[in-house]
Amino acid sequence: MNDELRVRDIPAVLVSAWRILRVYWAPFVVIACLGLALRSGALWLAVVVSDHNAFVAQLILVLAPLGFLLAMIAMLWLTRGALPNIAELSRREARQAPTEKREMRLVDVAVSVLVPFLAVYVSYGLLKEDLYRFTNEAAYAEFNQFSLDGPPDVDFAGRLAIYDWQVILAIVAIAWVLRYALGRIESVTRFLWLAFVGALVEVYYTSQVAQKVTEIREAGVTWVEERRASQLVLDQYDQVIETLGPMANPVDTATTWLFGLLGAVDAVVVVPLAWLTVGAVVLGHKLSAPESPAVQPNPRWERIPAPVRRYGGGLVADVRERWSAFWNGLRMMATAGLLPMLTFCLAFLVVIRIPWLVGQLIRLVAGPLQTDTWLAFSPMEKAVGLAVTMVLAAALLAAAIDWLLGPKLGPAPDDEPRPSAVREVIAEAGA
Image (tube, rainbow, N blue to C red):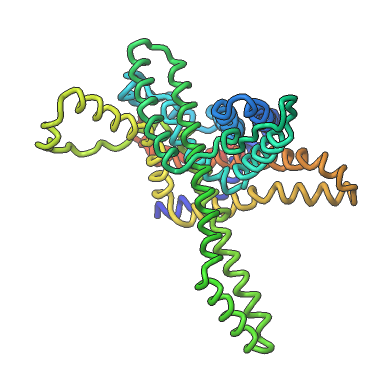
């Protein structure tokens, strides 16, 4: 019966999202445009700085996705007082951070936001677009640099900061230790800005990992396509299609549609779930994780020197705490039920297609244009589509997370069941 009631709440979640959009659309648009401006500015500055220092240029380059993410966080943060469950959770005191020895803040679990967000950013193709623009513009500048002392010294790998996977693993390890060290220093100095420095460290290493994962995935697809086994399968498929006669076209169409559907798993499943995880971490990171059972002391662990045990255990606890909000967000979605999650996935699928719809509308209104003219205005078209997507996604995320938080907050103080936030929306609309 409880599952049936939660399914009936789904239309009210959409009503709640519409109410948020109606109230906050103006600041949402401003925030989205500022975030996209930060993304473009970071790409331009990274190209300029790459001529002097490739490492600093990479640090600036990671600000490109950060502009998108900060805009989404700001929009979600703006809705905290508009929905009852989120408002109540925001008034609660979070658990203590194990390293900093103070109340846990969103900046302390930045990696829990970055990982699902980068999944969205990669699926949108934005990370590939950033790297493509940076690589081409920096390589062009490197190749065409002018020198009075003879031919220029061209160093593509150095300027583009292209790293092997071994270097990426070393960056991750160093970043974990540095993040822990910053937390320890903050616990002594009480200088809160160190937490933001640590968050930038996490932005850097997660973006480097995302870039390398994207490269490995593309290289893996190319490797599979070049294998003789793949060519044999394609040849056999072509022979089978030729023998089908009149049925060849319907079978080929159905097969193409099926493989296209499998290739669209990112858009249909990964992106909606990743967006929901981002919203769950941003708005629900104060939810306490369940207590873990006590672990019996390991005799082998006791043989390790005490300082190593103390700092090693602290590092492990620090990394585990940084990821706790991410796992809590996944657990929150797992308890929501299959049908509500499928409904949200379909809703986000429509939101994801907004940039394409905006592009088609602009083409319909503008009509045929010269190629040079269109190339000049193409970035603006993409920016408008992304801004609309961000605004709609923020409203839908806030309503969905408020609905997901309802069962997690427990009964009201008068020991009566908590009213569902979306039912309050229905009642308010009826009034």
